Amino acid sequence: MILLHRLSRIAAACLALLVSGAGSEAAAQTLRFSTVVIDAGHGGKDGGSVWNGLIEKKLCLDVAKRVEAGLKSRGLKTVMTRRTDTFVELEQRARLANRVPTSVFVSIHFNGSRTTLISGGEAYYRSSRGKILASAISRSIKSRVTGGSRGIFYADYKVLRATQMPAVLVECGYISNKREARRCADPVHRQKLADAIVSGLLAARGR
Ligand code: ZN
Image (cartoon, rainbow, N blue to C red):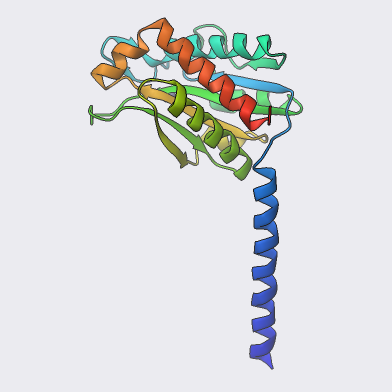
């Protein structure tokens, strides 16, 4: 009897899992938001990765501003966590974002690795709703940007953990890779990256 009881509990749990699975499948189609909090990584005393004559913080801010312009031209509201070369604590970025209603959070970074052969964009998520953003942005980068995307990955990053809204961290490419660094130094390429991020966000919004 106890076994039967346990089995029925397991069955109920499986059913609940199936139902919630179906629910997240439906939610995967769209996210509702009117504002995008754009987080340019690093800044001020924190330069981020430095490779091949490039400093990450500058690239992040440049792409963030291009994303801001792109989203505004499509009628979305934006909030920037920084718009100058200043150091902003991760907690402060999240606190600022958490004050913005019906928003999503996009953190913009460039990558560096001692394995200098690695190249390509990456999108990181922590929540299932963040995964929707990551998938859409990764798909968009893959199809629109030279260098493509290495895919989406789960990560317990502070800005993903401390933000309450769907959040994604986009690594726009490896500046440790010579060829990719040359691309990232070109404003035309950075505009393509920004356009791809904007398209990905709009795709996640279902329009
Ligand atoms: Zn970074």
